[in-house]
Image (cartoon, rainbow over all chains, first blue to last red; front, side):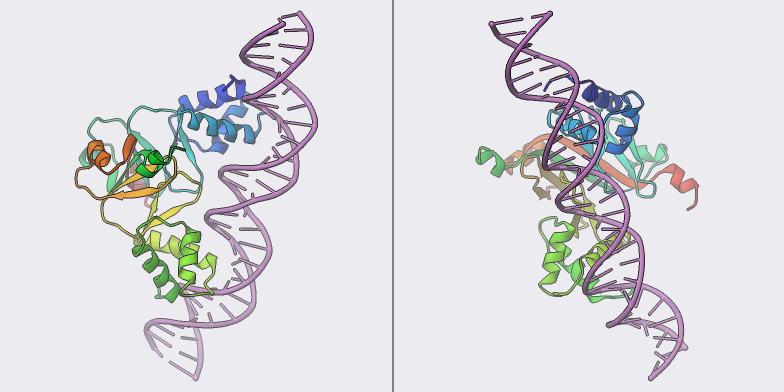
Length: 124
Length: 124
DNA sequence: ACAGTAATAGTAATCATTACTACTTAGTAA
DNA sequence: TTACTAAGTAGTAATGATTACTATTACTGT
């Protein structure tokens, strides 16, 4: 992967974001610095940065894909009404702790990511 | 919400599914029972069933939305290669336990769902 | 049976994402 | 520096999942 001004800008936008922007939001933000950047370029670089492990994709309630540049382990709180995603940094997060932050927990989902047995066996 | 044969069929397909099908997969399965059901009907009913809390949406690595009829608390293991989603039922799941199942954990995400302070305050 | 309204089938429209193409640029080696 | 080459880009077209729309059908209470 060669260095490119556009990819650096995309990564920088994500690393300095507290929210979890979508591709078009990132596009708008990068545009303030590189006005003629193409939306396709943003998508391509997001894909590469994800494949290389520099950013991750965030689970969301809308159809769009949300991105995150912060790779530190943390919890997400996803509001069912406004679909806003709040970062939660407390070490051992329990619903009572979240309640102190004004976040009423109704349900929880945990996902582990990795490679399954089939994919490891079929070396591909 | 009135009763309808189409919605019952969609829910039944989801409840009897071990995988986590997308809208078009559900469409194909319901079609074996109701051949002239419309894809739009499947989407509308999935939305209603989700809003009413009968089904949930599953985080995934592709663009399509995956659905699940099983509301019991459990963990998902998402393979980065084949994008297959495995249900994990063990009570206190730790990577070593998953390893026994042949699932190599590389990372983990936990999401809490609920309503945030803003949305509770603005009664809407 | 009738009225009122939710639900449906079928199709058109939307819109996030991906693919394509001609042109540009970063990295490298003479 | 210069030339080469493969990766990257802008701009646009295409794809495809999802949503919207409309005329018709099917519940449900009176």
